[in-house]
Image (tube, rainbow, N blue to C red; front, side, top):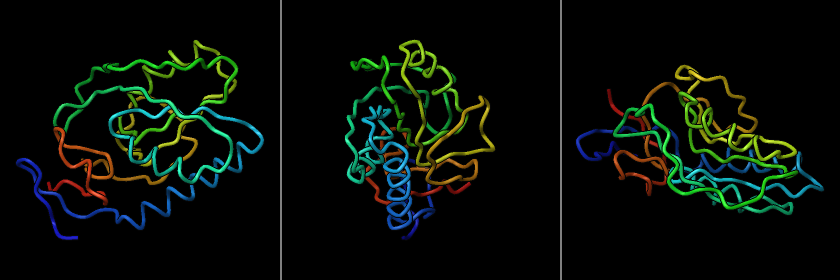
Length: 178
């Protein structure tokens, strides 16, 4: 995997498609075990989590449903500090087992502002599955129940993650060259 250029930035390989696939399967296996006999509702956060959600859901063997919501807080390579809800949730969460699917948790601001909206609907349980987590960037306390990778506080693209709209279709995850 050679370096790539997206817009005006260069990125170097960070996680291979095989490494990602192994972790997605592991996370799915943990969810299948923990939710055996239950029928959870997965809520995937668009746009970034769409590839992770699709790959994860392929390995979910229990009865489950999936829905999508669009939340955003990024502009370029920095968080804007504002969480925007662009497409609302259309599922009833009352007395449901709910698993949020997120591509990356860095500051935690997006989920910190979104989770109370979900808790208000009285789900039986509310868990978070994230492919990536940047512990050094976390500003809002969150418990990630199902995690693929902890990564350094560096900007990454690929596998659904973008830089100003580009890079989501890259199979691997690349890290910004500082």
